[in-house]
Length: 337
Image (cartoon, helix red, strand yellow):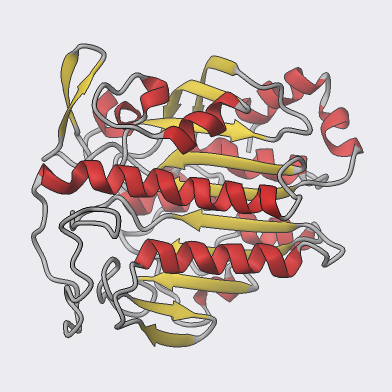
């Protein structure tokens, strides 16, 4: 694996790579939203969606103008977790090679407590996340595919959990993350959290903040229904995705951990093709599944108050393979070859 661009950029801002790791090792949180191109963020120029929490995160650190993912879910998940381009280790949709070496393994070997919460989609059964280097997990689409949104079904640390009292999946997952943060703030060792967000991927439904919210929706469904791809609730989904990022960052502040926590946020691919948005004065149609710009151009934000100067905008090209070596070096460990 060649020296990656993203860490090189960070190192330039700090003066040197040595300066990055000389101080107390940071906690690290990598957040990857599901199906959201960069045109949906107001900090990138969206004219219709408000993303105040992501805007604030970007203002507190670095915002990358030219960040690219793979055009669709699994290839991006494989790439971000392994730091390797898909032509070298991608097997098929919905699967991560059981022999793959992930950033979970690397951060665990570097002395970090590790956790993953959100959308899995990589098979492996109840032991899959553990085998890929994560001590704890709270996941949707690990062993089944029930509702991810209202009244969700999740797998939490080896057990199936069904929520039937009007809970909303993204909130359940984010609460799990925040509980983990609180439990580890005095653990004496740093933590690594990988948060592959459930939202805002279809089905597009009213969120708990929307007037049309229905806490009984899908309560009696074993599997998540198809459909629900109308753009009507896309704005609500974007707002709630932004809210969940803010919920985590605000909790870091509350626990006194924000200063020395590296938070990265990005997306796994462009927006769903059924969504068209006003962006920089034009209609911008999502093109998930396409190698064109609208299928791969995602937002990318990195914030680490102790090290990254606020308000930086970077025009260098970055992609998801840059994340693995960046966080490993920030953790003070040797980057993968």
